[in-house]
Length: 516
Image (cartoon, helix red, strand yellow):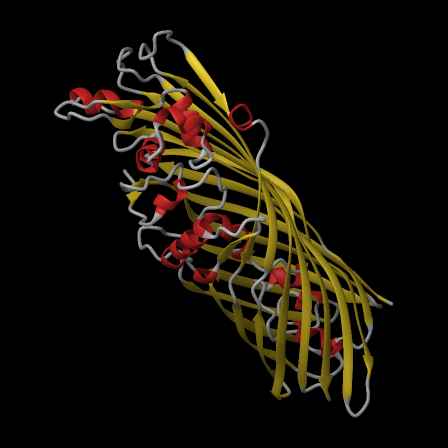
């Protein structure tokens, strides 16, 4: 099966020396499930109106105000993933595993005056970026090297000056250095064109074009979220709260793309090219969350929470090497190489800012036997509806010079590339004296506007809890199903081929808590 889709507006990606940011980059910060304690993970992450858990600091801080005593909470976890990719009819499988940490910290309340009671929380959570995706397949439609020829042709720069120019991408500079993109005169034309040598034989003689393409991507690093929350409630009926967040990002992506001639012709001016890239990102952000929970009657809770965008300040670095073999095209046959450090003299770094989407959460809960003494409550049903404005992601320049041309262009593309999406979470708990059983489900909708790009996330979860004598322990297993797309390269002037990815895996979370 051949997969390709036209994404307009990506010509801007080839207009600068190098920027690692592409539209998909924002999803690793914004398209993620609730990372809760084991109790909240068991009910699908639905807790916008539930309260009484440290996770409220990250979802609806009004729920902090349900606490009247002080709890210390620890939430370690372990995850494993199986990724299945399909690229132009060929499948591949990858596996990975890693440790995580749900909300860990301290939360407690105290009595105020005039019917008001207050609470404060401090929480840290951590999730890993560790993942591996690989795929390969035969392609008779496009070459990854076409992106470099297109950029060089549209740059207006003499091709001899391209390797030393900071006005084009490092990929194009390495491609020209290795003659992967070169100036030739095609049949029937009087002036030369810049073409990809991978396509040269087919363009010159109308010959067969067929390449085998390989992509492997390994990501690592982690996302640590530190938050401080405050909430107050009036006579256990109206709860109001807010939290301040400080997310810290460390991220590395190692990507390898290889393209080989699959025609069987050993004299068509192309054998293979291989590009190895390493992207690193470090940064910190700030955000805020505001929420309210109201009990219209004792057994019903309704909640509303608004998450501001996160304002991130990032610094990226980029390193790469390209190896090329063009059969007998050059005077001296064989493999040639070029690297970013060779052409630039050092590994370049880039500073920029990212503003993530707004998020609104509407929630409702039905508590079975809702009374002040939570030990006598028998359970609950709860659900969240969440709306995220994915198309409001925005990059900004943070360098000393004032040049937002690239970022303005990528922001316009993201408006067309993404859409707002709804997420849904539902769960419940039944309590049997000191033992609790829980089930949950969560669905995260497709953030892509293009109908060809199918993506969603689903989670099915269940767990047990024990509470007695000021101590509690919760254990949960959540199984996730994730569908997404992955582009090996982008072309500005023709349809882009992509791989579909389906991920499945589990997360085991454990929460220990003690009242002090």
